Image (cartoon, rainbow, N blue to C red; front, side):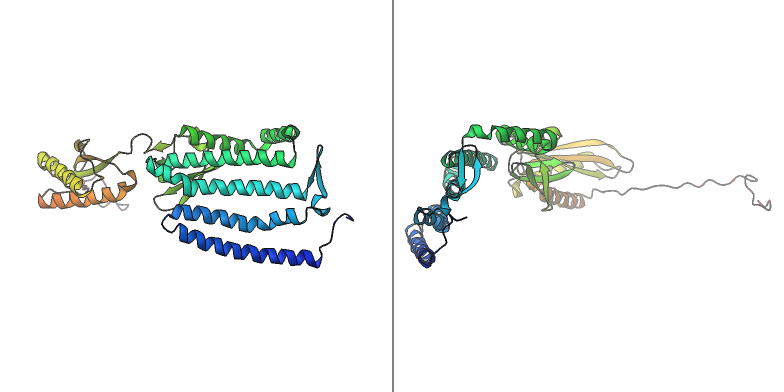
Length: 358
């Protein structure tokens, strides 16, 4: 501990002056960027993000240069193989990693969206590219930080072996979900923005992370599902190759109704829905299915196609309103279940009470 140098009043004053200078410089640069890029919001946000990074990490850079001749900055903390890990090396590695993370976020938030919009890439493709870019940048930054510190990657062989044993005994699920997440990003059986059906629960894929996938239900509840579930279980993806969805509207009419009149009324409802809502398709054509003869009704189904699966609930509701109004205009009766109870007369002498009275 004798090698550690105590801070003098000059050192404290230098740090205070540095903080003041950083705050003033950040204020000046922020105002300049806002004025120069007022009409380009993405470029403005990208430069402001860089300015914030340099402002927050400027103190670390100052420590490296100002205390370059101090022994405490190069005091051995942890020996790794032939490398003595010091505070100086840790600061350099942190700067590299945080800078790489900030560059990744700037590229994915402000730079690449311009190219995504230009080439009209869907939401799922954008998310996949963002994840790939982020992983590549962070892996390169991790490698550069290790080599800058002076740690040979071969020295991590022992650590990798221990990690492998840990995976074999207690981390199978974590490793499985991580690999499954990579498969989901590259193979894309599901992607961000897809509408999926899982155990009779309908939801939209919001995010695919390293361990789990976030699905938001139509009730605005978020379900956290392990990535491996989508590769091992049966999942209905309503947006996999074709975003169109067929709605089935069941309806029953009373016995004795004119079935041709019912068919015409249902097709008229479908035609009016197409004119009122662009998401209701006319190709494939709507179809009326005479399903069969029920206990209390003649059962029909109206098949109609929509191009926006996430709106199937409001569209189906509007169709039900329209069908009810159309049947009322055409005097088509929608029956309700009826049951007839027949009571047979008791033949004489079949039953008696306890006293033997008929």
